[in-house]
Length: 104
Image 1 (cartoon, helix red, strand yellow):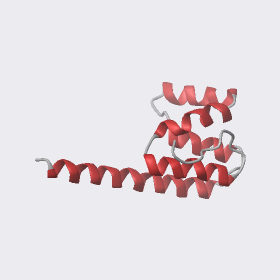
Image 2 (cartoon, rainbow, N blue to C red; image 1 turned 90 degrees about the horizontal axis):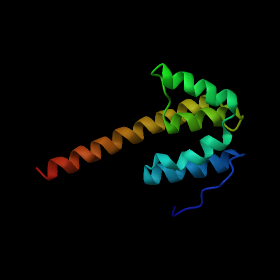
Image 3 (cartoon, rainbow, N blue to C red; image 1 turned 180 degrees about the horizontal axis):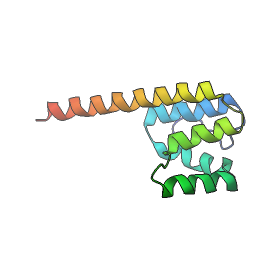
């Protein structure tokens, strides 16, 4: 990773460093180690139930969930980050479609 991504997330600033790197790279794997480290047995059980019922959260959503659970972000901040993620996905999709049209 080109920029600093902290190993441990205990502050909003550390979480923001992870989000910044994600929005630069689009690499959802950046959340993997933090999700695993911050989730407890109850979280893992709930995620397994969600996965089994077809309501699995993606890596971004899981990361937001554990941040909110640990009091690092508020619910309002979680929704704002979710909106940013949706906008990011739409922008990438539009960019990919534009690039594909150029090559036709």
